Length: 432
Ligand SMILES: [Mn+2]
Image (cartoon, rainbow, N blue to C red; front, side, top):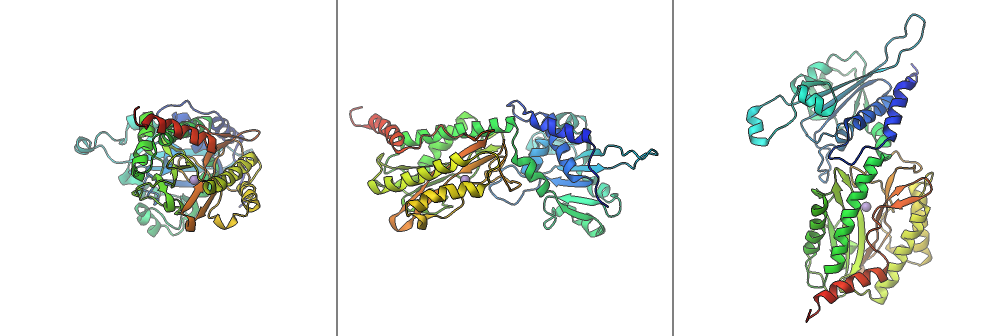
């Protein structure tokens, strides 16, 4: 059967609510979460989604399941959201009725003993309903029992049907008739377009990261350990409102800068090294992703300067291309053209852009960019023989006409970097 279009009322409600960003509060308002669930329901057409808070598998995800957070604002691993979209049969006149969305939260049962040890948590009842805006809250023990009642052949949306949550094993064993479908591909397009509230959070995460990086410019000197810069950066992020980093900080000096996923951060920084810092605060669930590369002693050598300027020019060319309708590939090619022109193609290692949001590597729907999408622009060149790795990365939001660089608060021209580092060095000079 060809699925019919959902009623415009549901569609419009979802889209209108998505377009209005929430204020910058501790947690997005329940209406914003509700609007996201309605938009997801439109994509589901019909069927049941089961989304558990169990870890998503990526060790860098500190929010157990970003999709659950996106839809409910909840971060507890012991939470399951069930959404059922159903189409009532047409009435006698043949008119179809709008589809209905049934929302349920399955929570661990109340336990004064557990609360005594672990602090308060959401359990089924009016308080949980009020906090989340989802009226039907049930003990997690009845989840399987409830799902076993799904009609024969129902569509069951799971994040990744090839890798179902372990808790659903009894259901899947008893109900081979269920039609398993991937929810990830429905959530990615929704998550990739950010509301104003989401952009504000990413912007703040970028500002905190910028503050930390400026402090590192001012205080870096040969002889420091990489982890000292990490501590300095993360201190500034924490102090401004980031309870944690969005991903493990990379502070890579000298040869380490050519190792893309270097995270040990234990080397003593030497005179003449470049220091590459790929870092990002997390603010209210949202990530920044910013990289700067600077000379440990405050002055670029001629060779470092030559390559740095090529990476910076490549980044500028790429940022200039960002606007609605353009693909990440086009942006990558713009950066690549500058690198190729300079004859440095042998130093390339990675793509130029990825989406940023609740995760530092956020899902996307693919295809051309749209207003409200947030991506990185991060060309890099790596020459291990010379112990030289340079990457410059900003997080940008796609606007009507182009883009807005959210991490513009960290200077990146050589002149600006050397000037900021000279101030730091002067402050430490003997006799001061
Ligand atoms: Mn990145």
